[in-house]
Image 1 (cartoon, one colour):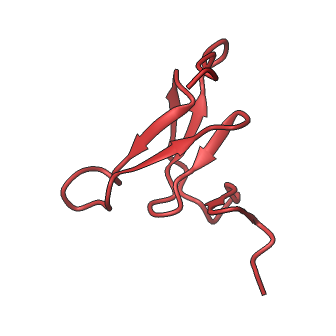
Image 2 (cartoon, helix red, strand yellow):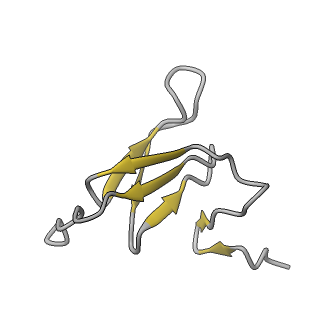
Image 3 (tube, one colour):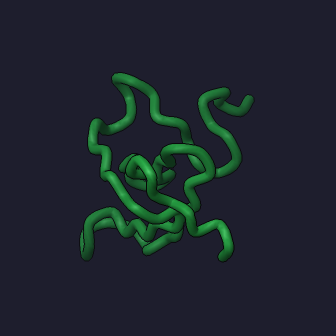
Length: 73
């Protein structure tokens, strides 16, 4: 059975389970590679709401207030 904390391919942040690392970004398109050479393959995440969590490394990217008006791409 599928975990109810997951939507699509990207997990939601779960308090006490997901890493506490939250990175504030200014764009809805965010690259994540898990921290370089010892990380994971680079993927691009799309922030639909206010934040997104990487399905590989559990880093959470949060959209900065007033940012993210790049819906045209």
